[in-house]
Amino acid sequence: MKKKKNLVLENIQLVSAGAKGVAIGRTEEGKAVMVSGAIPGDIVNVRVKKAKSKYFEGEALEVIQRSLYRVEPKCIHFGTCGGCKWQNMSYEKQLDFKQEEVYNNIKRIGGIENFETMPILGSEEQYFYRNKMEFSFSNSRWLTQYEISSEENFGNRDALGFHIPGMWSKILDLKECFLQEDPSNSIRLAVKEYAVKEGLDFFDVKNQEGFLRTLMMRQNSKGEWMILFQLYREEKENREKLFAYLLEKFPQIKTLVYAINPKQNDSIYDLDIHVYFGEGFLMEEMDGLKFKIGPKSFFQTNYKQALELYRKTLEFADLKGDEVVYDLYTGTGTIAQYVARNAKQVIGIESVQEAINAATEHAELNGLTNTTFYCGDMKDVFTEEFLASHPKADVLITDPPRDGMHQKVVEQILKLAPEKVVYVSCNSATQARDLALMKDDYQLVKILPVDMFPQTHHVENIALLIKK
Image: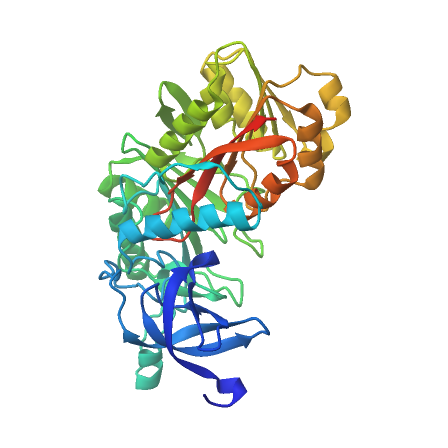
């Protein structure tokens, strides 16, 4: 070992996967080592970044022996790009580790035993599964260490791609991406080629100036595309020429929209969206339900797997047709409407007004008259007063953000005491924390992990609870 500030741990055998996709091993003394840049099964030398009393955090300095689970990454940007960090691990083992993480969180954090763990639902498509991608323009692309040390003059530094992890001002110029099917790559490359050729200004993050800022591409299951540009300033002639070029080259584009954004951030939610071509939205269908997807709409990015998730949620709810269902954190009401055809009444609650507006619009679009949606912070809306003025829930579905449910919301669920709770989660650690608060009143019957994001460590989980 070297001095503490340059501490290197040698020959660490990595045996399991941990939170946020790190691989975990132990020193000879038994101290845990959490390693980024490697996978379970590797034997590595580790450069320590943090030394705590109970564990080390570090990055793989050298792979001494390669894991049997390793596969060759498809993407040339693997290791530099922040996405698809498990692309070098076989998909079968990705699923195994995701299943293990969910199971261990429920037992360790939730303190719950004796529940059924259903086999993880893998994604039919391991690549090209996303229906929405966002890219950023930069006039100062990320240079590799090799490029920097070469002292070469690279001339044009314009880039269109992803932010380098932890370095918001640095953009990786993407040559390829395996997350969204074509013509995604073709459109992105054509935009960059045209913009460089025509001398259009790429955004300068540090100085907050430039013309082209971000590019968002969205598709539906019919192969229709929406393109959204964020422009820092209006340049009408340049804008219209660029848009006309894209529409002529890519007939798959059904609508093209843009926003002028002179703010410090790239958020579109407080911007006016201008429609240049088409209707300004796409239509999507899921098992006969129709959804209108606009530039600001939240919609599951893995369409096929989201459909499986909703089907399983409905299966867990096991509705007979006469139940009152509460759907907490309803978003745009997708789950609420999916179960409404099998329920007497569905009441959805969500904090974002635009999402509630979309949920109401979708319910009308689908001819559903048994859904009602309320807007407000969950802990402030889902109160005793609310429960006193609404029918008692027979079944409660909750699908909170990564932070899980506020303790007050859990307390209200326990007071409401529905016979059945279906808890959908994108973070099994906070889900397990919430289940621990409910275990005296509810029996955890079964869980079903669902893989929405292949090649990453992220995993969803559906839990069924029955009132004791």
